[in-house]
Image 1 (cartoon, one colour):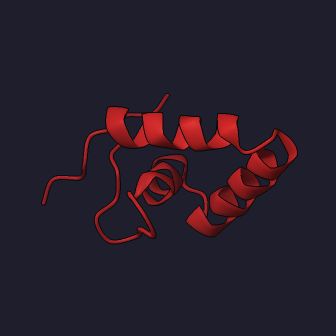
Image 2 (cartoon, rainbow, N blue to C red; image 1 turned 90 degrees about the vertical axis):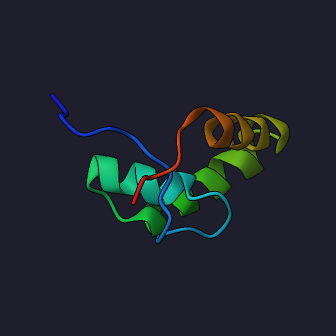
Length: 65
C-alpha cells in the first residue's frame, strides 16, 4: 500500500508534470511512462490518450515546495 500522495512534478516535467509525478509515485522512470503513453495514444486513435492526459493534468494537484 502506498503511503505517499500523487502530485504533478515541478522538476521532472515536459508539459504538465503528470508523468514525472506518476513515475515518482510508482517508483518507475518517467521516460518509460511517457513512451508507453505515446504508444497507447497512437494505437487508440489519439483522442482517448490526449483526453486522459488533460484530465490527469487537471485532477492531479501540483507538487508543493
